[in-house]
Length: 532
Image (tube, rainbow, N blue to C red):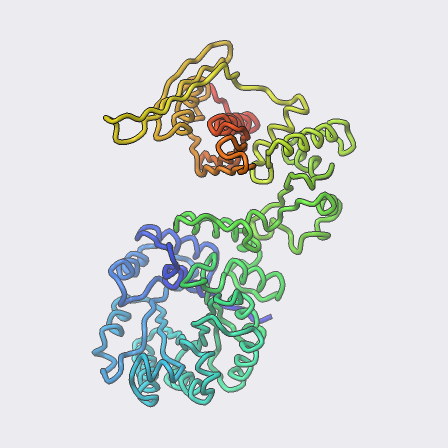
């Protein structure tokens, strides 16, 4: 099958998405990660746009990239300006990248209303700019902006813009669905028509405004495109760009097109790459993302879990491991013995699916869910529950009491929270006090202070999310509250749950589970908690 070049524009088009930004060092780290992943092109930024992008082009030369080519992005020369005198063209040359990608107009509406020039001058702008960079030994990728809209408006003129680039020597012609409004069958029809007219290879650049960015990219490949542009996690303006974390596995696994340096070996990095770039962009991963999301291979219905246990192909379209993901078994009121059994297997606990212990766990689960507990998003608490039912749980400490004070008076600008915690740890009583920004923060501080002498690795744990759900709002301020806490030690992340009519008590319960789960992980890994 033909090889498809992957052109990543996360660092340029992706940063146009709402809330997406990378620091200078972050952009360099992304470039290194994408190169190691095996993409063919990394578009580093808009050369004439801002100093940060120009700094990237300077600093990226110091990296030891082993595969990917770096591209600078820009536009054609302006109307009625000599190409060598155009500031944007000069900035592209100053970026000094081996690949230059620039866009030109394909739609007469843009030529008339945006550029405010003639169709003939627009064709000259495209050809002059391609020729300028080819004469200076650059690989030239021409992005035909708004091509599909332009083609539907005036196909002859849209084709003429591509021909201007091709005859001037462009190495790649990339029709762009800039507004993201084209449907897959239209993309296939138009790319098929173009493939019969040009010897220059064709690419595709799509946006996701109709939730079709991935589908449109794949249809373009079916029709003859050999170059796909997109972003990791679909970052981009409005609804985003075509999502490479879905396009790449579909190309490799479903359509059998080679598209990464090391093929399916590289594909095993996919989830890690997705999470790495989310982290640097300060974005929470989308749990339902295809292939890389936490829910992509999560099973809840008892029948589904039983089927996967017997033959994973029964409810999984690919092996989770081939994209660096893993199977998850969810626990809820829909759970059956298979769910509990597989969850116990995950924890390396020896149980039989038909054992009384499994039934006891199911009964306890049903009882707790009636009280308002929900374990789908709190797997750490559920694992501790299994241990307790199986008598495999060793409590690391015992709570003798806690107290929280929230103070506000005329002399204080803000509320002040103070928590006192009394624990029994290894026969000793620890009585500690801590202040915090709020009652939960103060409780967390006091709990850590009490335990750190015995379990110093508790200091590595930090809260990453805190969510509150009112379960029976008709009870007003006496309503039962469910608290979900997400914690991390920098390497692993886990979630715990607490339920009570008292928000502080629910929070304490989730905090205790979070700390105990960290101790359980360390014990399971054979890590010595006690200080030496």
